Length: 423
Image 1: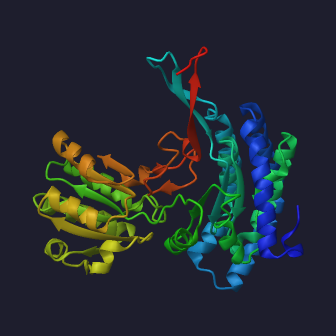
Image 2: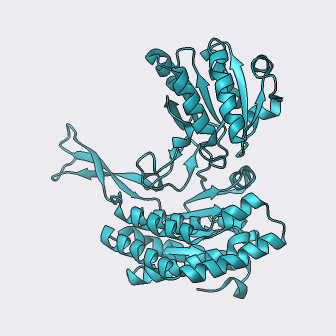
Image 3: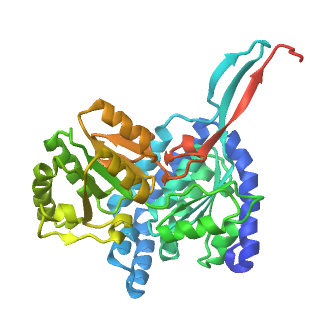
């Protein structure tokens, strides 16, 4: 493959695209055993290269410190032996998943005598753009490969050494299974022009998936000429209904906020029915304070939590990804739903209630990629949904919504069987 240093960015990216398209035909035709061999071989190569991966990552970590990279980003960037082992485990888990390609469903006989159904097939070539976390290189490659797609990966410049080292392991695994190197290609230039080129290569890239902050996803969505599966932000809500089990409500809300602050499924706004607010909020607030969570409240909530910070309009539209929670007391479920419709991001929202009819109404009227009843929003995760793994969580409506696993990286075509049928 031509190196980025030998060509202009445009020429380099076009070369990657041409090679990816050619390789996609071979990956699409590969059987499950071959793909699983590649995944397990990649896992072995990463395990064998653990020390060199750590060394490469330390170069990125030092460069990050020198450039003043924030502590949270340095944490995401770091490759520890435990995180490397996590990559290895993830690859084996994906290899163990059923192969979706070729699966036929909805076969039905028509009056014409034809038998018509749908077959699951790869999308083709998937471009993935991501920031910080180098483990995404292995995860994304594995999911695309298992679903029969070729992929072009463009990681963040802050992780360039780590990603190149992981990409080398991927190539070892592909070679061991007899699959072309170009099945998974990593963009080795840190020039930002490569991103623009990638998302506009309509002849070579079938879909782009950006993984990163709101600014990255917004920029990709605005500039792309190929379809984008996007996740803008996770502004998740929990509504505690007047018919809620109050002990459950406190437990679920606390877990949804504090399980992990930095995940997109973390609760950012709590809505509480005014009839139970006095019974729920003081107890919950005590637990949040002990955990170090800053609470920001509306005027009505302030009377119950006088030491809390006054919320501003900005708080209702903020994905904190931090130990901060905004709380609003509402007079009805309808007001809670209106709040979610006005300020939510369409990611994940939940209701805590023991009233089945109200639960049904909430799930019908709240239009998010995941709507939950009596469960913490942090369960919005491909692994927890039984998908095995995910490439991200889509807040789009087309062509996939919610956690994007193997099936979300495929499409379907009609297959028709006849016995000499004519029309």
